[in-house]
Length: 465
Ligand SMILES: Nc1nc2c(ncn2[C@@H]2O[C@H](COP(=O)(O)OP(=O)(O)OP(=O)(O)O)[C@@H](O)[C@H]2O)c(=O)[nH]1
Ligand SMILES: [Zn+2]
Image (cartoon, rainbow, N blue to C red; front, side, top):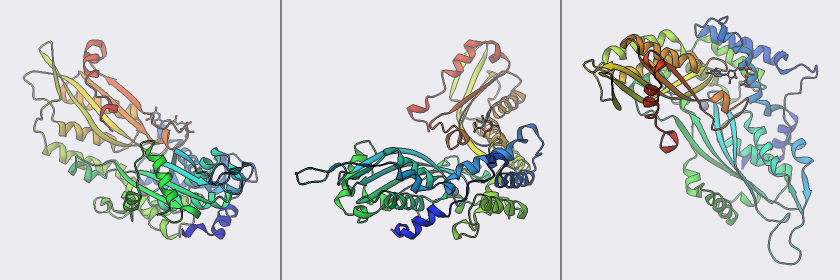
């Protein structure tokens, strides 16, 4: 494992960005102010009004979020581990390994978030760490997680993240060996083109990587077998062949996205702004893995430029008006409730410039003789309002109002979403989701109609994503 040499470890400890000696709060620190200024350039490049109420605080929020998300550059592994190494004896007389002299220890299912160095989006990590103690001492269990987080809170790639966690723990604890397995999930945000061409868009790219030191250095060592068996016991089914196969050369979707063809070359001012953000985070924008990152981030961000989208919506909406079968129809006063459930959407939170995504359910009344709205039209409306800087409540209202303007009145919309800004940072509520409702016309006064529509919404736990 190349990252295992002592020099690398010391560099990680000593070269971190220094804590601000003026004692300024994060939002007043010059790095934060510089990032906020760069974010203003990005918003303006998107054609947004940076003085619009919803966007006024966005530059500072994004700057704080990015700095918090990369605070690992400032943290020192030595300080975390040193105070938490406890003496623990091994076996007295028997032959074998146990306790502080050779008994394998595993901490499973640590949820981490890291920032992808190729595109600057957060990626999700399920982390499994094992080590074999030696020298009659063990480390405090929470420190394994804390050390993993130091390296997750940087701009990363899965394999480097695994290697750095492994290396730092090895040098910090001096055990017989360390094993790290990471299951990583990277959001695959569709560009506008692929959304309309590919209705089966896969929302995630997965990578499983591993790293081993000492007794884990040899992938065929029996101790790997013990480690993987203990993961299987918990329903994590990995074996060595699977681990090898799943390592991807370039896992970040932005590296093979075709959005360049759709959107054209990135705006130079915006690219320069992102380059300056990398420097303010304490990174070297010339590091070879980061060289294309600013352009990739800008290309991705430009998906949310409104005019670009309006063209797309017009094309699709005009081209596909054929009615589709409805998911459900319920008679009501000579009219029917039509429902279109689980239309996928992707959007960008205007508070933190981070994705939120999920499904939209639409219900509406229309007379029996009226042709119901086609699924493709409703999906286009959803994408149209999704591909903007948004908040979920506004998205819900805008979809409801648009459907209502086509049909004249009685519309109900439910949006179910996961907000990256709630999960990957800030309050870090893994697994949380948000539902919003808009009710227009009859739906606002008739609880039975609402109930009828709501009971059709499928439970994501029984098969949805
Ligand atoms: N109502 C609403 N709030 C949102 C949406 N997306 C993000 N937010 C919230 O916007 C708020 C911004 O709050 P601030 O206190 O200004 O920013 P912050 O310090 O980054 O907030 P934290 O996320 O709590 O760390 C947070 O509470 C977010 O959860 C959305 O779609 N709708
Ligand atoms: Zn990426």
